[in-house]
Length: 174
Ligand code: FE
Image (tube, rainbow, N blue to C red; front, side, top):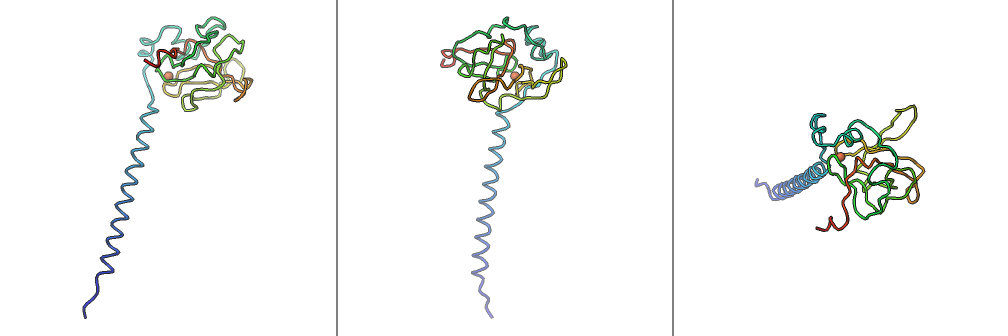
């Protein structure tokens, strides 16, 4: 008796095509994940390296979690249009259109350029509770965030000038 193999061959082909499609999909997904990881690549340096790269004031604030004196930093009163980058690793952190005059003596922003640019952690130093703000890329200390900011977020990112490098809007176009 002759058996009909056509249905089996047909299903085998369909199965093979589905497998190929799935593996192609998985390969694309892997590419996406890899792309995301490289965009948020971390910067890690030894203390010795940071001391060579940063000025003593920048090192004190960024790596030693220091605070500059109010009304002394170069950006607390700046109203120029542009972006503020991390002085240690160059990550874009804040934009001038979210900067506001808080009267506290430090550059104040109501939002970071993107939430992924910064990290936050509880800070119990100096016998008080605050939320510390760090650069998500290099872990550098930037300042603190408080909930007494203006709309639309109600937040005040109080940031040390020493941890920032400003880039004017015209310079960005070049
Ligand atoms: Fe950084």
